Length: 82
Figure 1 (cartoon, one colour):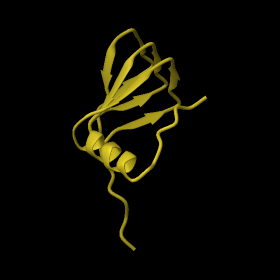
Figure 2 (cartoon, one colour):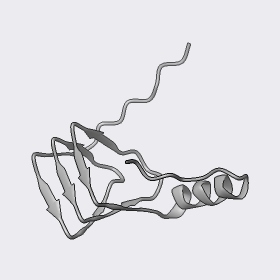
Figure 3 (cartoon, rainbow, N blue to C red):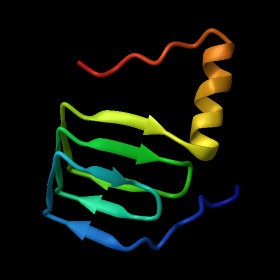
Figure 4 (cartoon, rainbow, N blue to C red):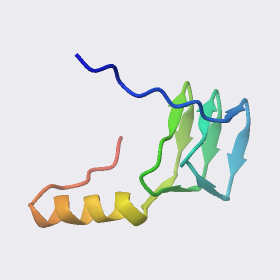
């Protein structure tokens, strides 16, 4: 059985992001808070651990945006968390 790939990403710890755009790609976020932010994801490696998201807007660009578009075309619905 093939082992999953392990990425060694730069780590951002204990930061609070408020009212800004944050790109997830190529970063590991640990114990971070995201409030009223635009969260950008383009399909690259990304990790979060023990992070809190409040009133964020998810924006999928590049490869991630293309996948979301195809899924929606197949009838899938993106439902925001409660």
